[in-house]
Every structure is written in structure tokens, then in C-alpha cells.
Amino acid sequence: MFKLQTLNKISPVGLEVFDKAKYEISTELNDPDAIIVRSANMHDMEFSSNLKAIARAGAGVNNIPIEKCTEKGIVVFNTPGANANAVKELVIAGLLISSRKVINGIQWAQSLKGNGSEVEKMVEKGKSQFEGPEIKGKRLGVIGLGAIGVMVANDALALGMDVIGFDPYISISAAWELSSNVHRASSLEELISTSDYITIHVPFMESTKNMINKDMFSIMKKGVRLLNFARGGLVNNQDLLEAIDNGTIACYVTDFPSDELLGIENIIAIPHLGASTPESEENCALMAAMQLRDFLEKGHIKNS
Ligand code: MLT
Image (tube, rainbow, N blue to C red):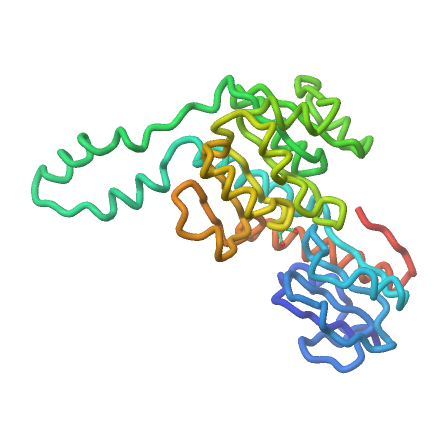
């Protein structure tokens, strides 16, 4: 019997993949054969010698100590693409709210107090402070053309944006999916220096840490709206705060709040909701569970 430990709540759709006669599934197990995890931080976890595989029901694997797993021969799976639509939809919302000051406007409207027609009058008088530009006709730079980046690029075209993408390692399947109307930048600098809106869709690794830094901010146009639904560490927060102060960044939308980014008018901090849809949780759990089952039972290693 295989022992499978679940470190987070996993959609039952995923767990149904495992034949109950062959598996003991529990949140508490001493020496599991495999672990299925969502966002629990595994960096300080002791791994038993029996552990053969970890599956992350999600795309990013920065909550898993990859080097330690490699040393110990533990196979790590993730589920790229399984939550791409959920993230893409929130990125499109992020694009719109980075431009139109809807969030600030809602907060302001909720704070209004008055009787009868007073609130209506306050709205008419005060709403001009929340004006923001349309995205149609503006250039969106998409850094990273994986599953999410390609979807964002294609949908932004449908919203009338001029889209430019950059990815030196684009896969053949992503290249096929990408509309031919998306310009391919010859360098990151070309994308950064010509875009009105920039959205980041690359994995967080040593080589991408702080990739959006002082140098990048210095070549941006004034008033850029920057979106980060990939990982917080891709943007250097100190450099970002300077870029907000000097008017380079008109709005930063991030799915990764941290204390230095809170309470700042031009920053919209979302509590990591990119993949928080029931559909995405089911897709990720299903893909992660099938990967583990096929590995444990047949020795197959297939990361989609
Ligand atoms: C991912 O890495 O798949 C997304 O950021 C969502 C998540 O962490 O679950």
C-alpha cells in the first residue's frame, strides 16, 4: 500500500484518482511515499528516506526545496497550465483596474455619508479624481510566453491592445498558440522601453530574481502600469517604490502583498488570488494526482 500525505486541502476530484485499496491518504503520515502540496512551505521539512515524489498542485515550485529533492532523488511534479485560465482572467481584471481607478473609487464611495441627494451630489463633484485611461490602442508587454503569458497576450489583442511579447525559451506548443498578431520583441529592453502596460509571467528562479529593477525602471516610459501575477521576488520592491515616487510607475498590481507595499495609493495588492477558483483547484489537483499515481504505480515521469 502506498502512503500519500496531503499537506494542504486538496480538491476531492484529485484524491478520487487514487484506488482506495492501494493507498493510505492522510494529512499526518510518518514516512510517506509521496506528498501532494499546494502552498505549504516545505523548505524546513525533514524528508523520510521512503519519500519518492512530491507533486505541487500549482505551477510555481518555490515552496519546495528543489536542490534537496534532487540530492535525495525525490521527483518533483508541478501542474503548469492547469490554473492558467484562472490566473489569466485575474490578470485581465488587473489590467483594467490598473488603468481605471475603480478600487480607489469604490473605497471613496463607501466612505461617503449624506442624506437624500447629498451622496449623488458628492459623487458628481468628486468622481473626476478617479479618471483613468482606456487600454484599447495601448501597448501591453508580456514578459514570458508560457501558458499564462500566451493566454494574456491573445486576450489583450481581443481588447484592442497592441501586444508585444518576450520569451527567449518559448516552447513550440506555446508558439503555436500565440496569435501571429503579437509582436515578438528582440530583447527584454525593447519590450520594457516601448510598453504602456507590462505584465510578468516568468518563473521565480535565481536568474529571474529582481529582474524588474532600477535598470529596467530607468528605461520605461513615464506612467507605466506594471502587473505581477507571477512571484513577488521578480520585482525589486525598493526600486519599485522609487519608480512610483518619480512617476515611472503609475500603478503596480501585485498578487503578492508584502508589508512595504501596503497602504500605498498606486499599489493594488491582491492576496494571491490568481488561481483561487474552484475550476483551477480541481484541474491542479487532478493533474497532480494523476502524475503521482502514474509515477508510483508505473514509474512514469511526465510533467505536462
Ligand atoms: C501557481 O504557482 O500555480 C500560482 O501562483 C497559484 C498558486 O500558487 O497556487
